[in-house]
Length: 251
Image 1 (spheres, rainbow, N blue to C red):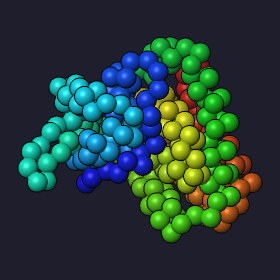
Image 2: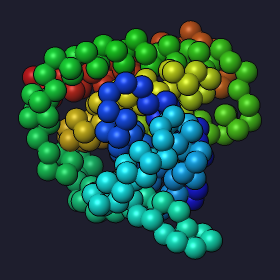
Image 3: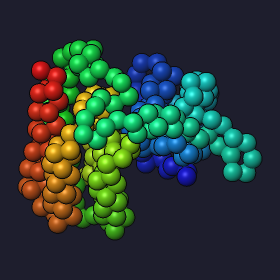
Image 4: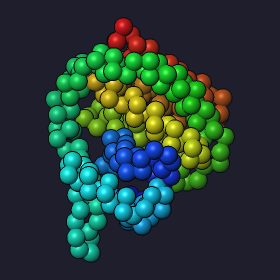
């Protein structure tokens, strides 16, 4: 499937090393599930314009990720650059118990130690950011396409299979996108990526998933009914629950 240029992380590269930042943006989109195994990246010209990097820089970044096993290039009329990352990761995730057990063998305590103060900073930032995005989405007049994306993302997030973590992130990104603010959507993508490995590594607890599903339902319902106060409150409850679970399991 071809992926358009409206992915939140396809935003202009600013400062630093353009090559390294471009690589990071591409990896972020892949790891957050905004582009998945089998998806084709936007055409080189469009993606370079969106990232505001030279086509030479973009080609170098794509080549590096080809070598690293994230992407592959195909020739011909149906060719392009395709995502090939995730097959092995999903296969490994399928062996994790839904009742409990760390994801992909990573030690959440070690990951949290590596993050240091950045963990609390990310949780605080998320607590301010995502409720605001939900409230803003609820205050907008959503298009039929916006509403359908939210409903589809909500349904996918209920799946308890190996793609659950990716689908959860996609729902949060869909809510951010529905806010109509590219800056908000990009910031939500950043904070989701910051917490993603840690959330994927902690034990999966059925009751927590039930709570999360119910909170997701309330958030999306409030957005679809234009209730910004309820959308903000439901997202605050959801972010607080996630933070408490993370800090409790790591304490």
